[in-house]
Length: 253
Image (cartoon, rainbow, N blue to C red; front, side, top):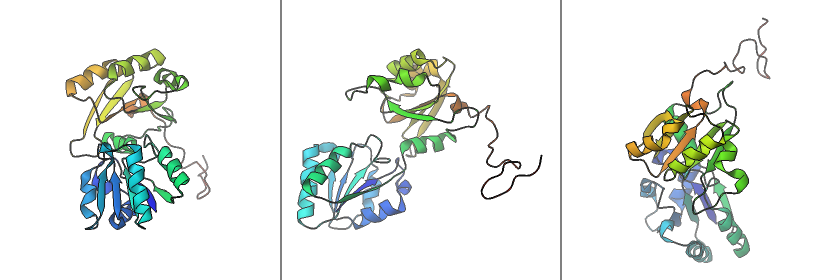
């Protein structure tokens, strides 16, 4: 059996309880060594076999999984954040389907949640933004034309940009060309929830210069939109005394 587990955004205590239990019981662990905090490996079983997938191809990962299955061993495939975002898990699951290997997925806390926590931020402020676009700049991995950053920018919603900290000149240009105002607030969150976490807030037209000044060129998320300012929002209706819900009756006005 293979368990695809989300390791969380960085801090070792942000893995889920289920994920921690699966990790501690595993016979084989294949972890994404480029981003997963290795402190999570401290509680593994004494004879657990550990592989760093940053040094492996997909074929090599699958061979380790296949050999473990033949030996009746449980494998944890440990991905950063939540595996459903930029985790390249579909190709692994399709291969395991072809091999007849059973698997399940244990979700994790994504770094975009860790980034919001670091900023003390709510993404979906009433009257400001009720939508969050999660995307990335095109790099060595292409992005469909219809999903370009400039296309999404036209909506003016809150945008969280992954895997683009080394492309901030281009990102800034696409965001502005797409319709965000130069004065739109933006945030850069470096290594959210790690001990070396850093947060910087600036205007959109100063994004690239700010990152350069702060020495941030990788392992960072960029958040753009009016919600970054955490101001000018409406009161939530859910907790308004005159708002009726399934659980309580609103007061008469």
